[in-house]
Amino acid sequence: MLIAAPSRLDTDLVELRRQLQHKGKSKGLTPAQLATRYAYLSADGHVPSRLEFERVLGTNDLLDLNYLAKGLRAAQAVCRVLIQADDGHVQGLGTGFLVAPQLLLTNQHVLPSAALAETSLAQLHVCSPESAVDPLDDSPLSRRCR
Image 1 (cartoon, one colour):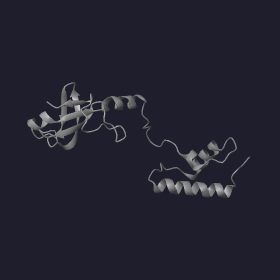
Image 2: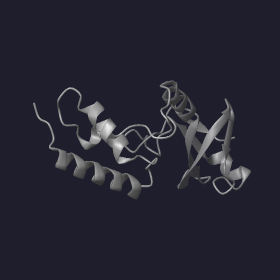
Image 3: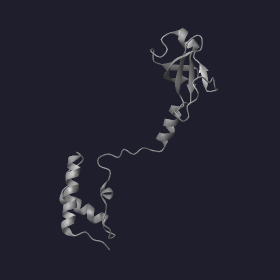
Image 4: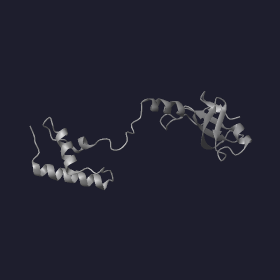
């Protein structure tokens, strides 16, 4: 069984308090409070690491798993706008998102005219370079902007 010597314990607690104050996260922890926490963490006989001293300070900002599901659902509406000239030449890329099944919202600088929107494509489910579709591919996930 390992037990820290009192001199090392005092040094560790002083250093930990200094680090907490330096980061602006100190909630006024006194050496006595840190010693109490150390005693609690070492109750089973092992010397706690610095990681074990970490805990939630202030408010709990953990999110429910449902948060991720909602994010995935919202991401399904995001699309890449393939800006094309009349001849089909790709002039650039932009982004937008569906606000209704047949209604795309994007910035005016992406599609500055109705004529340019007529020849452009909206590509859904383009998430990352690894899963990106070929910009010239008129795949089932590509829809004409009208």
